[in-house]
Length: 67
Length: 135
Image 1 (cartoon, helix red, strand yellow):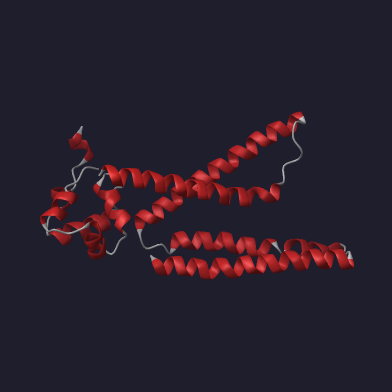
Image 2: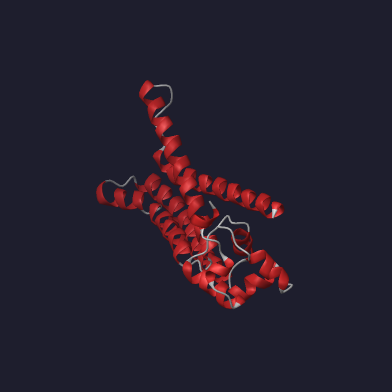
């Protein structure tokens, strides 16, 4: 699933490790989500959205809208 | 995540130690006393119990893994291991039917599955490394 995680992270000057620490997940999880190899669960997606103070759809692009 | 790994090792290492002790002990007792009936069955089953404990520890490693991506990757690696083991056993069975190979050593199924798990984990690790470099 496409997302703006890398951009949002860069805006805050956070490394993948910094974001992983804030989300309480591994750095490889952040990398996999950023590169679209892994779609986070709904609870993790909410956690990400709350961290950036945005709505989920402001971070993740619905697969039906990318076609 | 580290706690989950530590818990896994705390279960895995004693189980494998028990396996080595039970296997050696069971073989020695069988050779020394040539038991029959129930004692023989008990001795034969004894080394299998720690292996079952290892299988349980592997299951718990998934259940207790707090990182959902790591958990998904572990399950993926286990599916690769299962597919490899079933494939090898299926091919072996057909070869066995023709008499080209001896009867398959069924007790090697779990070690074979573990080897498949290693292959799966290396494969997924390499995939992540390549994808991480491209990102």
